[in-house]
Image (cartoon, rainbow, N blue to C red; front, side):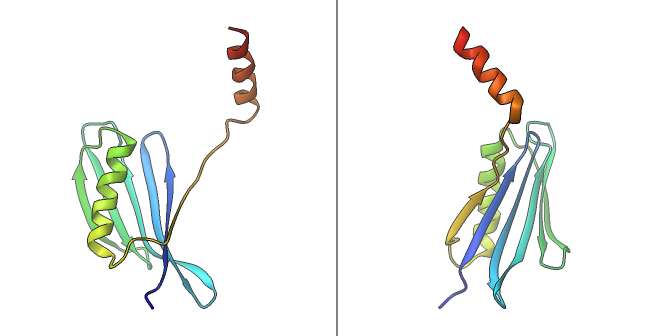
Length: 109
């Protein structure tokens, strides 16, 4: 049976970080680490690193949106992986107290 892998995604306003993890000796260990930088800017970069942090692929591309950066990263990962990940996780950041205040203001309008 092939190792099950998990894709973890962390999207920001101008970057997208992601990684492929697999269980080794009872713990999830990074297999591939990646980042797309300069989203929505004329010249961006997309890098893939191995489990030791060494860059093994780096390309310059323009990313018109976070979705575009994710799709291009997914294409590079698909070339490297024999199977699709068993699961995908995404980090979501809550707006905190400010989010509640904005929500109340919108309800008044």
